[in-house]
Amino acid sequence: MTLPVRAPLRALTAFFLVAVALVGPGCHRAVKPELGGERTVEAGVPVDFGSEAKDAPVVRWDFGDGSPPQQGARVSHAFPRAGAFPVRALEQKKDEVLGSATVTVVPRPVLRAMPADTEFAIFFPQLRGNVEPMVGFASRLMGEKQARQALEEAPLLSLVLRELRGQPRLVDPEEGVGFFTLPGFEGTVGLLGVTDASPALDAVVAELESAGARVTGRGAGDSVRLERLSGAPLLLFPDRGYLYLVVPDTGEADGTQEASARIIKAQARTGGTAPADELEAIRTRLTGMSGPGLAELPLLNELKPKVAAGNVQLFARPVGDDASAGIQGVWAALRAEPDRAELEGWVASDKSLFEGKSAPGSELLGKAPAGPIAALMVSIPPDELAKLVFGAPGSERRIRTQQRLLGEGLDEARVDKLLGALRGDLTLLAYFDAAAFYRNFIKGNRKPEPRGSLLFQAGLVHPEPVRDWLTGWLQARGQPFEVLEGADATRLRTRVMEQPVELTFTKDRLMVQGGESLQARASGDVGASLRERFGAQAFEPGHLSALVDVGRLRAELQAPQDVPGVPPLQLPVARSLVGAMMEQLPPVELVFLDFAPEQGGGRFRARVELRSR
Image 1 (tube, one colour):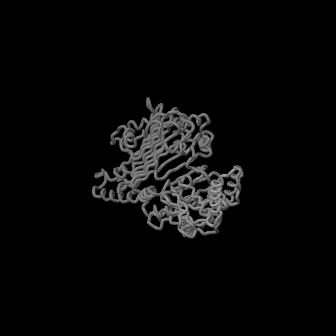
Image 2 (cartoon, helix red, strand yellow):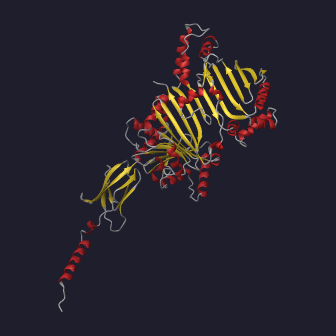
Image 3 (tube, rainbow, N blue to C red):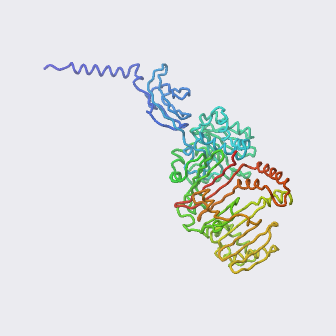
């Protein structure tokens, strides 16, 4: 029998040739380096390339971002900035490309650089497009010199200002800067996104030293320990594209020791280690942080859609009494333009604010003299208003109020009636009287003292306790007053600071008018004009709304062309002098605030407008 040997011989020959190729001198070329494929990573976060396997080739790694190549079978590299970078593995002695992959680098969001248990944070989400508007507004508000001086006193922010002046770029404009607090730590942590940690760290150290701090040592992870003039310690260190500055609160000489004890106890409760040094414990905590940090906190993701984006953002979660009251968290955004800044925020609650109770609106705003320079309206349930005015039941402020009233001669029953007398609505209007102002300034005591009128109205459940208390209060101080009893109202008339004051009590309200007469002003629906001006139901029932209109004050100061009793030639001089004094004040045109409960929480708004250039 003849054996078919040709095919097996050919197979054996091929197998032998392959084996020689695998074990021969050139075998290392057959094992390619591991690049990990196309991927997206965050700036500043170390990325691994290659393999730790025994047969992994040692190659030269070119990361495509301008940094020096590294050599090794396995290396780690942090890309300093966002972009798409071609990473190549090169043969050691030649430029032969053994493998390549594109790594897409995105900015590391500032919220991912903060721990998930952060209690309070205020931050620029990214520097580009956000810092300039805020610096511009602050410069208009405070003056450019004062604004920059205030910002330069904060070491991390001073580095940002250097970037705005066009100095060598150290910060990452696509990343953020901010400050946050942590549970168990009495102090603040600042952070700033940087492109190159080492020179950025040196720059901040130089800024701190110029402010009087001194370096006391260097530690793990390129950290730098410093001491301020007051003796308080600081710790500066880099981590994954950010610089962190840990600033403990040290109100007393032994504040650091007490704070260290607090954090050690806190870590012991959570099962963590307890480093002897509080600042090092914070560094260890932050550098050891993994995961998305604060960025994917469920509460934060619930809050974000409630508020439009802004240049500066704020997050806070309740602690202590606020947490027990059902408040879950606060999210707010501040938007700035050269002549205006607006704040919008949301307070999340797991139960209805004010327990879902309503409150009456303002009767005074419906018909009041036109043109107030300030307005305040509070419309909340009676129990909540009593807490706001006198303190919550059982609180220290409520107890002090009760003790003070008892000391004035009221018995406990009358004190309880007085504390429960408010109906839930308060309104205050302030008016400026330019003619009276100039008469006093030119012919009176020659001082620029305000002259005008105040109107105050409060809804009352029981007017008698309030009337009796006010009468007793005036008598106890020897304040002269007269009482006028009418069919539907009781009036008390007196004088305060040489100005007439009249208090009117009806069956359901207290009305106070003090100062100059308002009879010359036309009356109308002031509330409607305020709502038209500010929208979103401001100055409506259920709202807390406030306004200070400095622009109207300026206009009224410049309006008088003739004031009875004032020499015609002196009025223009006085107007110019007062105008010059007003120019020395911050250029604020108006300040507006509003808060109202909504389903699932409450919304607050604030606006500051500056005078036109």
